[in-house]
Image 1 (cartoon, rainbow, N blue to C red):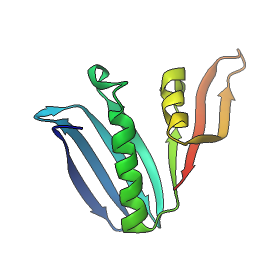
Image 2 (tube, helix red, strand yellow):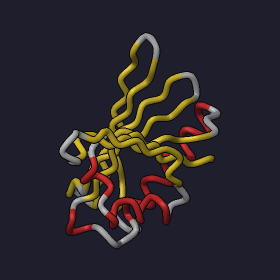
Image 3 (tube, rainbow, N blue to C red):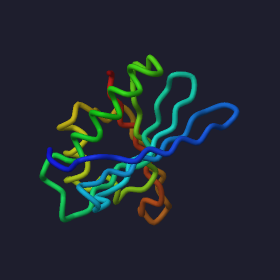
Length: 128
């Protein structure tokens, strides 16, 4: 992938490490990836690739780089993406994570009396 690079910001808290990764193609920022590490547990907070760059494997490329990094540097064995907002898991987003080896391990919906869902919680995990 020509011209591909990334900028990493690491924030150290007393009980965890927080990372923000910004992928670039040449000088264009093409997205964002945020994750937190606490006690070898990796929580993936956000993976976003700008729409113009989707379907070109950039999201998968940076996701794999992050997985290899936490496995090597923190001896992490799994990654969890936690979401509490239903539209995050539109079919194309969920299929992206499934394509990259993630599985839905938990889903809980809170339902109002009128039948509307106000909160969905998903755990999407991957063993690395």
